[in-house]
Length: 191
Image (tube, rainbow, N blue to C red; front, side, top):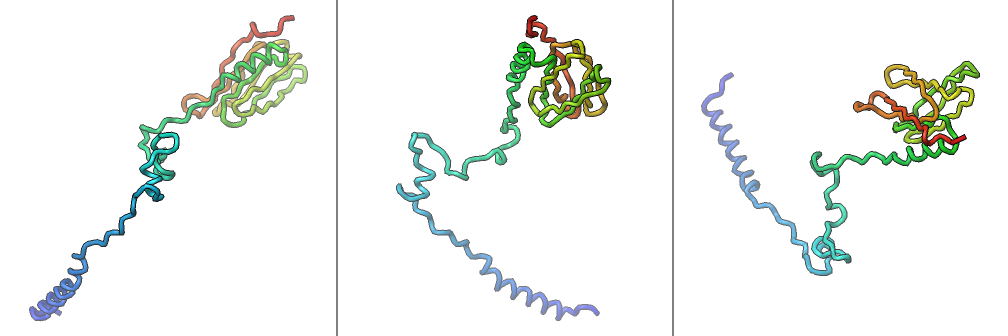
């Protein structure tokens, strides 16, 4: 069924009539909210325009930019924890004779380390607390300790000569654990 020119004209006229009624509604200017007075003593003026008691200017609570509002290049990365105290504590444990080897975990989670005990012909398990030192004493090891732990991919064994500090830390990808062994001969308790 084809539209006749009469019915098409009627449709156009009715659409034009509807638009002419909507047009004035759309053309109205938006209503402005009443202005908030900003005089000394008003809560708005006191929070935004007056310096705090110390004489410094600041934005009211909730208006200061937060880290989530700043672009990524302006957000400073979190500072790593200061672990130099762990080294000092490890040296103190060895020099006092309280440990043959100190294992210093730089991990943010618990790790498991094993020590081979030749006197028992078996492995002894140590749970390394995050960011902490674990002293190990093994009189029957004769100053030569065999340690084993999983580096995240495979089991690794290392031989350590006492007195020593073993640091276990994440690699650059934070997917595998690495270690460094430091001889503490100068810190060893003198006989």
